[in-house]
Length: 270
Length: 355
Ligand SMILES: Nc1ncnc2c1ncn2[C@@H]1O[C@H](COP(=O)(O)OP(=O)(O)OP(=O)(O)O)[C@@H](O)[C@H]1O
Ligand SMILES: [Mg+2]
Image (cartoon, rainbow over all chains, first blue to last red; front, top):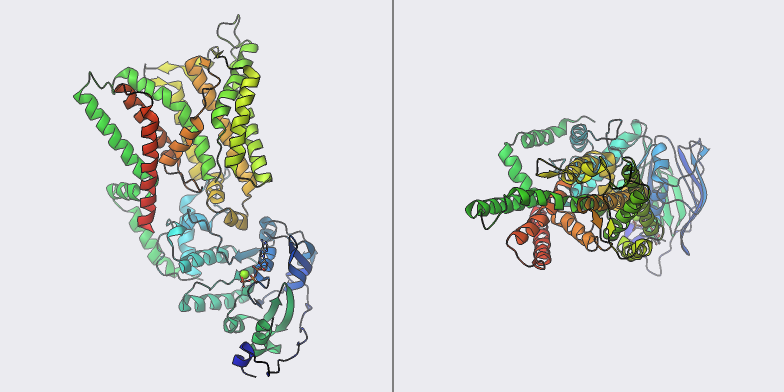
């Protein structure tokens, strides 16, 4: 069956039956694990029976249709969206994830889908927001922050047209804003980097660069979760795939056990 | 990854740092709202000074009494505006500061008088006025925190919370004291420290405004907490996402606004020597006006201490000029109204031309 048929099935097509979820149990103690997670917004159930784990040195592709619950899950791992019920483990130890400081302690950084920058502040201040370089009385070292910002902006993703870290973020283009958000997360990441549709506004060149960067991070010991609607990108860089639909996991497989066609099938057949 | 791609950024930074002073100033007036208002302020001063030199007898702008009065009159509103402006930067309003100005200065005067801190009292206590001031400053902070709690706990607009609070504290003032004027003549050295005049020109109150402005400048523009005010005011969700607690940050801003309202009330009362229970009415709007003229955004996240101080000074320049040319008092509101609209048009134009 061709991809095109899978995308636009007609009545006569035979769609494959549910494939079993493969590789759903971690082999070693994961870096991070969610077990039996439920998340409700009032009466609406955004996540149910969700199990999810992140191993050391791996890149996970988190896939699924619009509204599947990917961003909800990402925000939960970032600590800003606590679960209604369920358990969270960091390095095998049960942990409460109720606010951002909890995930920061676990070495998690996030590039949010909605960017999470303050338009009225400069690039430098956005990068160091909440993590200002200060002396012991809490006064900021502007020069040090600006120099570091210049380094960061030049290294993580090469962003066209940003040459002034004092520029207000509100004046940047969509892709430039996304690049600032990426630069910030990349600079502070330690154990886990969460990327929620990080390339949605990037040019082809910058997208390639970022994907290559995520691939390299693995060698440096940082695991990543990549949320994307581009299955080719996901297939290019990820080691394992989790497909969500309507707030729950519908498919999971390691790269060696699956194909891009199979992933496509599971994503569109929600 | 190496920083080799940063070279062009570093070059741009060093080019910017090496601009001539003149160019830096020109860019500043063009890029920053407080820069624009600074130009407006200087133009206004130059015009007034030229007029005063040309007609020294009719327009006594440069006369010593006029300058002394200008300084005295400006300080209470300036100090209130520092608090109100900081709160606006953090994305909230306090409409009750005018009523707190009256209420807390009356509490301060009552405590001072009851405990023997009046200058006419037998063996007037030197300490009591200070204690009373400290008490109302703390009360101001607590009341501000209460406004914050109600606003944040129930997620309602602070405009509504503090509109209610404004009416509430007006009633509280009349309930506590009644509608009659209250004597407030604190003993020395308190009186000289807060109500004195030296060199026949500078009042203590303008020195306090200067001190507070410097403190606020360092708090807002150089301290981590100030940075968090801008962050929660500019984009609350981004602040949460990055680990800044908006409730805590905003509560501190509310407490600062309440404290400054109390301080401003006591300063004004010390200067006048008595308190009219309705004296603070309308000051909340003037303080917001001064902040807005100085570049504070109604939506939060924007504003500066220099802008707030210049905004206040500009409002008082208008008042002063109108007094000097013996214009009827009702002209004042009209001119301030025009100035607000003009300043916001200017700031918006600056922002639009940059985007
Ligand atoms: N704060 C909220 N209150 C109520 N419902 C919410 C809230 N946040 C998300 N939802 C709902 O939860 C579901 C999952 O949303 P989520 O943002 O996680 O989707 P997603 O998988 O990231 O989709 P997309 O690919 O479009 O980004 C959606 O139906 C959404 O409407
Ligand atoms: Mg999403």
